[in-house]
Image (cartoon, rainbow, N blue to C red):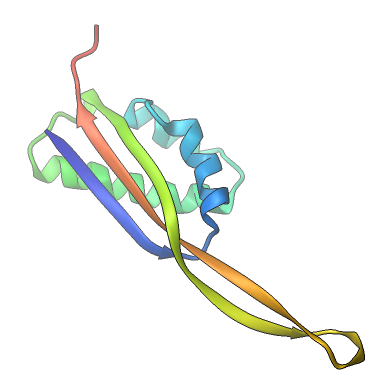
Length: 112
């Protein structure tokens, strides 16, 4: 049995979100929550809220919260907002504001 939560259109690039997700992949849910609380990154705050949402979903399904592990944590590309920044000599440069779709899947498994 598994519980999942999805954060769509997060205003952080997928590369920066993957740095945080790589740290918590495969951890116990409680340990990952503790790790995210002290990580000095903007995407860590987003993933922390997403993990709390996944834990609430698991609780609604009647799963044991002490046995939950992070089975899958991925950050996919979302739409890119494009803006123009004025530059010298009448030129302009395109800015790409990247977004991401972050997915967390929790699974209950027995500890050995």
